[in-house]
Image (cartoon, rainbow, N blue to C red; front, side, top):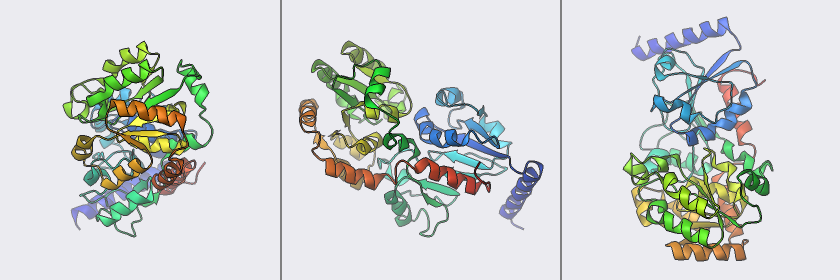
Length: 381
């Protein structure tokens, strides 16, 4: 008998022993690299938490010292667990929103939920150079990425692991639960002000590095209420590749305060999107997500960013089609003025790209939950 067969048999015996002792008890392990990562999984977890048959464990295998920071916005009940403790425990399901592979000798069904759709680092996330066949479920956000996985050979065309789910964290953008004026009041911003969300991606080549300070100052001077939502890694001053060696939150916050703006510190960007009348980005998943609201999007074209983060060209084209493209601060400010003058411009394109990028928004969380119960061999509560 091969070693692989021995391991598989041992895990099955372990599973059956656990099911005999507690037939309906299931353990789920969540692993996240950043708070933003977890925010994409959170709607699924929170929908399932009322089921008392389920036990949730949270870990951070890449940097265990940041575990509590990563899950600071998580809702109880759950338990923290170290990677070492997790390696000694049997889980029914392992869930990650990034390609984090933990050693779990006692086994678990592994589920990848993904955390964005921007197409950056294409040979990792969009058309992987490595096989993805070890994942038991791949919760695809759209048909485009599913097809790319098949085309590049990462999965088979008839893969049982592939599930078209959508993006659960975006359900709130279309279900009417988030109201612009209410959000702005909660953030301390007068809802009568024209509001702009600036959400650059993370990279040493991001627009925030090349023009972020000047852009925020110019928009503030023009009287706009500016909300800046940074990627978690844009605040990592230690890693030059992530942020250019600057904590951009610390750098921009004094400017924002001067003009009555706000540095958005919550991990889930979806809370801030409906507050904005116009959004500015360079190339980020959040830019695509904003299209679900059918409001003006302005794209700062940064060739160095596209080149150095290996963005799949078709995604650059999609965002360009749905936005107004600019190259510098002057053009950005002018584009903002045009957006307020004619917010319906490019509406047809925005809706078309949103439909392309997000599978059936509003019901993604329920599809994910249903798929997890199926994987756990458990009837929903």
